Image (tube, rainbow, N blue to C red):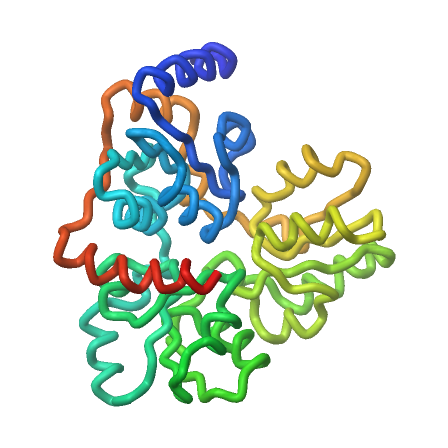
Length: 303
């Protein structure tokens, strides 16, 4: 097996040749995070895909993220090193299903979580991420919101608005498996720690949280808080970045089984091979991309 140092050197050489940028989600493997031009959450990476200079985007994440990058950067080559890295939540709503739901709620605005396919984005009025869902909902003029697909994020947004929110039936299979029992066990083990959880968690878990935020919001909170210990209620990949950036603080997983297997499919060999072969590349048909782009850009304009 090729060692990581040699792989990194080859990746950096190919990156220069391809004029590539490497975007990496906070849940990726540690060694993949360490080669990133930018590590972040969905909103940060969406912005970067639209604004960072380069001819090629290597997206170390899952399929909907690479699709979003391709929609926002139609003249760039977008590579998804792990072509089978999918988001189960994104498959919990289809464009046909959304059209049916829309037909039953005329006049409602459609907010789709960025964790959706391009086809679903194309049927939506605006996208949101976990970090801006509340602001997006409150910025709309409509009083009724169809919020798809994540029912947990919809429930979280509903706490901060007087609008009627009609949630989808989807969930993040990683965050939804975190329970109040995990909270009780973690509190017993670390009674002085601040509990930070992701808004994709169940409402009954969010009830116990000291702070609720996206992955980047969690990272900021660890940096800003006077506390020295934190229980982190999201996918465990974030712990690597927290350890690097805040070595003087101690962070513990709320659930050690909160692992997204799809986020772990990308490794250094796949990144190297993607740059070497310029594949697998992600494209979105322009008819779909143009409509999806409006929903994404409307979100970006608000945030």
